[in-house]
Image (cartoon, rainbow, N blue to C red; front, side, top):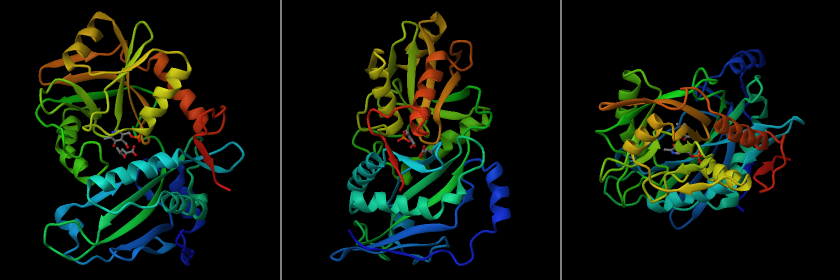
Amino acid sequence: MIPFTITPNTTPTDAAIRTAKLADPGFGKVFTDHMVMIRYVEGDGWQDAEVKARAPLSLDPAAAVLHYAQEIFEGMKAYKLGDGNAALFRPDANARRFNESAHRMAMPAVPEDVFIKSVEELVKIDRDWFPSAEGGTLYLRPFMIASEAFLGVRPAREYLFMVIASAAGPYFKGDAGAISIWVSEHYTRAARGGTGAAKCGGNYASSLIAQAEAISKGHDQVVFLDAVENRWVEELGGMNVFFVFEDGSLRTPPLGGTILPGITRDALLTLAHDSGLSVCEERYSIDQWQDDARSGKLVEAFACGTAAVVTPIGTVTGEKRSFVIGAGGPGQLTEKLRQQLVNIQRGIAPDPHNWLRRLS
Ligand code: PLP
Ligand code: COI
């Protein structure tokens, strides 16, 4: 593996200021003292791996990322264990998905061991940045940008791979309740053959107007329908979706290239199988969702993702519809699955699939 140079920040955040910031960090606002940066030059490969003080970047104004959006990222968390140590959850899965995104965006792969070491080194050096409340995590954001100064339209020849970290509390305010979602019946997120399965910034840029519409109508998140028939439920702006039926079975939209293959989604499918629950990955239409919610056949629905963990969905509203899921609050199976997942992530429950990677 390429060598890493570790240069601690010489002017780290004052401990009292850090403690104040960590009391209620929210999501994505409180950043740690360090970052990882690795350069890539075509022909020479990855080089100059550094863990160093977090600082603004200096980029040429012609850097390709600023013009053609050649950018990908990951979202993962470090969890605090009962014994005071920290652990990552399935970092190998994030590394693999990162490289699948890289492939789709014509970017170079980052060797999996370099990806994982980058994240681990950052957590180690910034381990004092866990929020003080129980369950607080360090949200890690590995990303890659095309840094070559060139305006011709082709894959860049120079890149930066970086990791930053942020103290993270719950993604949604009022964490205990259920969220309200808005059906985007006008904007779609991804088409067949497009970039829906890649975690690239462009997908999020194009989702912002729909998410802003959701917020302006008083909802928490947008849910997208498929781009061909405008009918099949795909995913939320930043999370996958599951449906729970009265017979205790579960359903989630299939991975077909237009939704993000969520690692939380995959973990929940596995946990559900382990518990003997019936689960299927099949398309579900928005009309069926509405009919089943109204008839009582569908009793719960939830969103899942690294940031959102498992969050119950209480109501669904669109231009042409509005319906309540169950009693509009958290459901039993949703809560059971959330607890099972969180207990593994915090090292409280056994980890039969070896998902936790403890930091030494
Ligand atoms: N779908 C989208 C669009 C996302 O941004 C995320 C979050 O990363 C997910 C789904 C869930 O993925 P994961 O469980 O790997 O965090
Ligand atoms: C994540 O869960 O990691 C995401 O990327 C989703 C985003 C809404 C923060």
